[in-house]
Amino acid sequence: MSQISQPAAPAASPEWLRVVQQKVETLRFGVVQLVVHDGRVTQIERTEKTRITAPPSNSQDSTAL
Image (cartoon, rainbow, N blue to C red; front, side, top):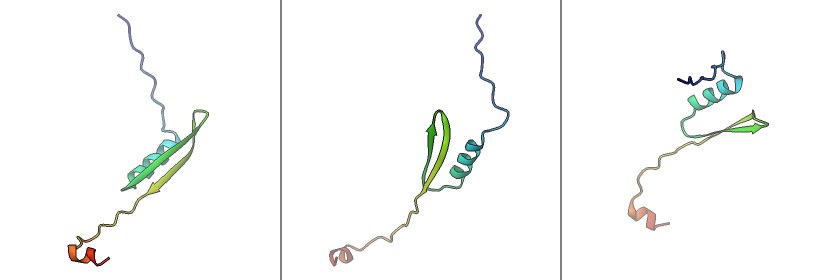
């Protein structure tokens, strides 16, 4: 029987991973983007969207525009 070796889990998460987790957990709508150079995360960008719900418009009001 052959055994499949599992990669060892790192003892602690890298700093960039903790930053990404914090940014994702506090985001309602948006994007978290990683920039990687030479196989390393060098930049983390977060774009947050603010959703505004508009009241339903009346068909008569929309014709006045």
